[in-house]
Length: 222
Image 1: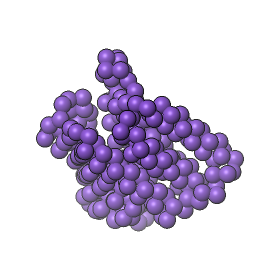
Image 2: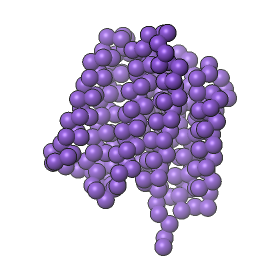
Image 3: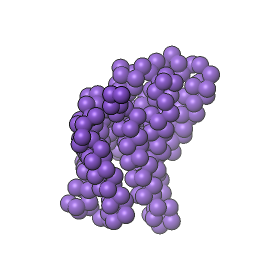
Image 4: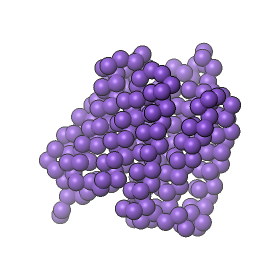
């Protein structure tokens, strides 16, 4: 582990906390975009300096790009951000399968089968709720649901040796996106939950990214 990886992670935490407290629910601005992007990009830089796998670095960098795009106004920026996060989830699938030993055959066994069923059921319910309200964004949103479910299922398929953190991170990520989708497409404009949704989305999302970093950061030699 590099001398710089921990300070970079701490800077990422400071940036994330500043964004949460001061800019999370504010209108788009250059400062807001910079803080939001830096909060995840610094995690990626921490992974780079620690010698982490390219899968993790790619996923975090794509997350930072998605953060930048979603911090801007307009449907084009939203669609490009959606694509960036979809590719990030595919990078996490690659990390789980090719680096951490996830095997999808494990989904048919015991508790994994129950977890996989619940995850698919939740995804199906969300897709059903979003189908009409998503309008012309329907198909990109449906494709994203499929990709994030694949990421969640691959986390369920991880071996016990991977620990609980990757699965917890995946579930936090899914919860964050479910709240964001509800805010964008389902909640009425004057619904009181809109006051809290941005804070929940960011807290869950950034904690997920930080947990992925913690779970897959190379350990220093003993």
